[in-house]
Length: 324
Image (tube, rainbow, N blue to C red; front, side, top):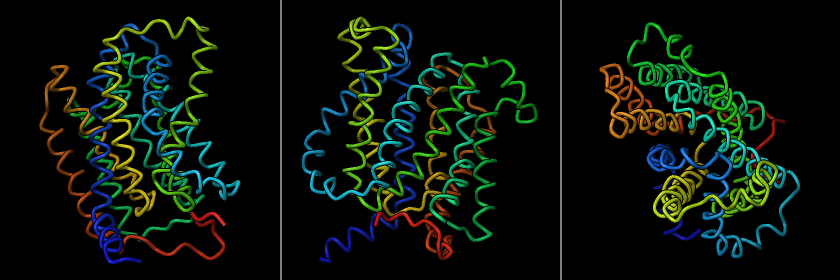
């Protein structure tokens, strides 16, 4: 390996947890643009246009990655297809559907089931094991997120949930399950593919699924409701910032970060979304939000500094994230 490549690898490895947190912050900026579209476009119409724009940008990447795909094993193909159909197409549909109800507290708190789901999946699928102190940091991170989401009255969390719609909660929970599985499957796929290839396949293979959803719901007429202002700036911004750039950054860091560590860094998403809601949607910021944010940032820094010490070797005979 060349010195420059080795040096680059060390840099990314050292800061990979922080880079995943940055990607999560960019994902939260999605709310600024998606909120402008939900009043006149359905979830499927928004997501298919978003995915189509990103796919256009990634076509050259997919062509250059063709040599990787020719020798790809069937297990890796299954992982990529599940990422595209589940973690990309259906999860984004579910989240947009939940977002359209504008019940932000319920939507964001149910996303916090992702770490628990992904930790279980990482243990089952990847054989990842953690040292005892890691679970204490998970608890601290979840406490921080809880304080951000329920900042108005942390002692009465059910009041925030009981005021929401059942449909919004189910959509948010479904998105959380699919995104958590995508974290684990993405780690597995990166054992056989570069992050460029995984990212391009994720969007490209999701597009036919999303087109089919729109056709089933509305027929060909479903593609005739767009306005020029939908694409510039809103859909284009969604595609480039929280979509393409954030996901490329995420996969670049995930290639050197265990799935269970990445889920903790991704908790930066609801924290950032809460502050965007305060700034853009004029919601107040409470002391509990500030304290919760500080706890979360502390956990991310701690995990980044001690990442090598956090992991234990998987037991012999467990599934490794490498395609053979």
